Length: 393
Image (cartoon, rainbow, N blue to C red):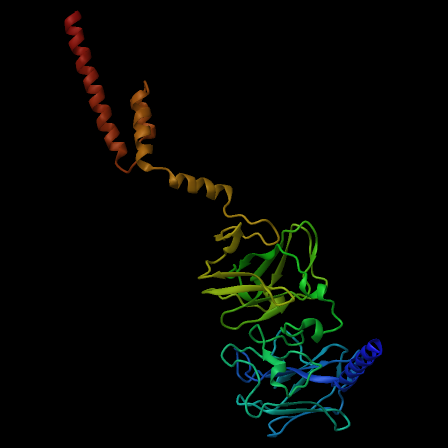
């Protein structure tokens, strides 16, 4: 009897899961930048997520707000287990990512009631934030992101602030429930990322135009190749940009990867900035902060210390100084007093002291001093010679 009862309960829960899965919306509103970005409060964007295992055509779908501030007619495909990005006004809202659709209208910072309709006019998803957004931060520009796309959008507990500023447009959210949110991903694929991947050298103030010649170098100090696809790097001061490394970005073992500003769109401020490297599970792997950057020098890692180097080495081991600079620095460190004493001792010990002094003495008045000393020396020898001559002869 107990086994039969257990089987019935198990079947009940199994069918409950099937029903809840069937009721889950095929496409949901997944992330909202209702506060805009650091560049402009007008840079609002909305991200949709496709829960299904097949692509969905969004033709004649709509996103509507109850206050009529938004009335967006959708078009285009949202890929299976993929994202669809809507940017407000133009494609510069998220400059590093191409928008799937440009829309007009605006979101209120006080909140909106958003409804996603399918092409049959049925409600696919609904988020009633008319009393205030469930999450997001206007000061830090952290977006409002969904924890689980299979759970109801009207549930405030299903939303949180993005763990990084400006969110994750067209990328998985920073929710801790990563395996449940994206069931097609294996947990080992999400969390097992190698150590010894770090920022090794940066060039904030290069010779020539900054827009072309700024670069960041990533080091792989492992004894094996590492694929850093979906890793992210971002600056934190002024206009900030998040760069996501594309698929199959391989760094060879004990080697380096150099990425330039035209590719990353990351602007390294000359006055002050910091760079952060994230693994795909949004864990901070490395961070470097610098103050005013000298022209033509790279900020380079030497073990656990960062120093400005006059020898930039993109793609190579870092160097602090050239051989000539090392020699000059050693000469500067020599004690000038001890050098003068050793020089005088050398002159005194030399049988040709006068001749040595002529060639070794330094200073703007040394030549005249040497003439006087030579004259006195010759006069002394002359007097001595005359005196001896009178005695002997």
